[in-house]
Length: 269
Image (cartoon, rainbow, N blue to C red):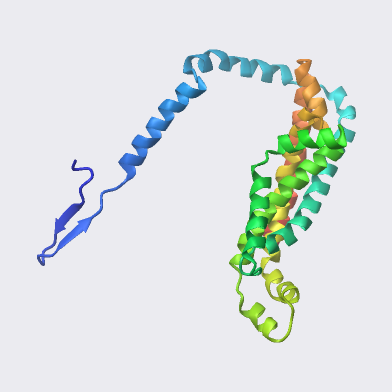
């Protein structure tokens, strides 16, 4: 097949230059095959999509205008959502630091410790936040404690993964110089490596907190407390005016938090 053969071009000086054929056609064909089988496996029906999409606008219409009288009942659950997001994010970012240190192959020479630490971070990343919250509700009961634990686990995995990659890519010249002067590995890390990764470490932690506020609103579906409980309740009773009020408040809250965190992240970079 010509599509597989390399293309040769004769130059004016008599030399022949060979160009490899682009793999783009094969990639496109592979994606189309995957798309075809994905549609059949998932049972996706385009006709049903177009027939039922109008129901989306019906629900949106029922949410507008939102029930403003319901606003007074939302402040405390909203604060609970923010508090468990903030606490889980702070504790997760703190615990991610020593775990990332142990997972860094340029800091720890014991490969078993490095492998186990990386495995723990990978295991925590594969655990969905909703599943972690559901398990936490069985252990700690229904409430914000379970949500805080779930957010803590996600933050440790997210920040820890990014952090150990930054540690492994850090400049080790100052670290090795301090070790040669008699500093311990921990002391050399504190004064030589930590200042290098600190801006990205704080920036990633703040960015993670942004996402955790949104995740915390969903955790109420498994009884993890916060405003998600009221959202689940209102959806269950088809009280879309209350749902509209909850979503409006969440959008404003997330926008404010993201604007503030973006300001601080730009200062850190």
